[in-house]
Image (cartoon, rainbow, N blue to C red; front, side, top):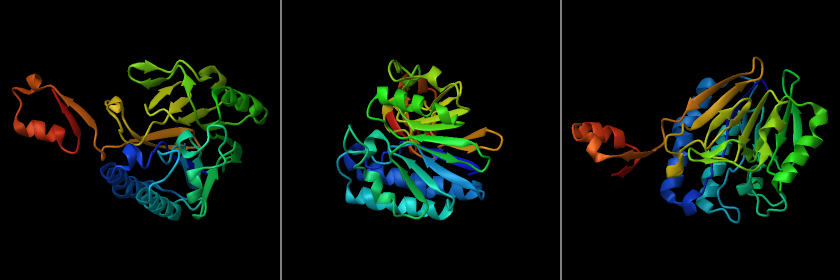
Length: 271
């Protein structure tokens, strides 16, 4: 590992396996993400998915399964040095265990590593990367972090709540792991919360596209992390539809063309 492409919370099968939403999600990967990966890829790059590949905890729709496997097969041909997929809470059937997981349908694809238990990898620069999939509860999150303190890892990739961050622009996360517990890491990347955000060394990755109205106004996308110089680059998703709110009285002097431009490819609430 020299660099990591980082995404999270794709939630394939969302909206009760909506065909429209699945087409939009998969188009985002085929027509936008994968071409950009090919454009920016360098030898030694890996892909890290921080959890919640799928949306349904109990069953996977066959169309969703087919499309997801195809996408990961395409990605595996690019990331020959590894794709690391952390189990999220939507990827496992039981709250008490990660044993039964929808992610197992991907494990036979070349170069893909399904991480259902905590594990440490060493990158090209001899830095330690700690991968912590979802734990059974927040107390287990804290316990696992404390148990692995001994290894003095440089980076943490996880799927959890972190107190002090936000669920969305109106709600703060008032429970979960303390952000102070994570100060020892150079960088922390977490999935689970869909509102992308940064506080100190912690990045909540967010989902790669807007899924609900509460995502409005929050930039969505993916990251490239360079382990050599610890630099980070964010690539915003300007391909997928966004939730837009239009107040007609504010557009009385605008042209129809202005409204069409604002509304094209977006989900519009008209007030």
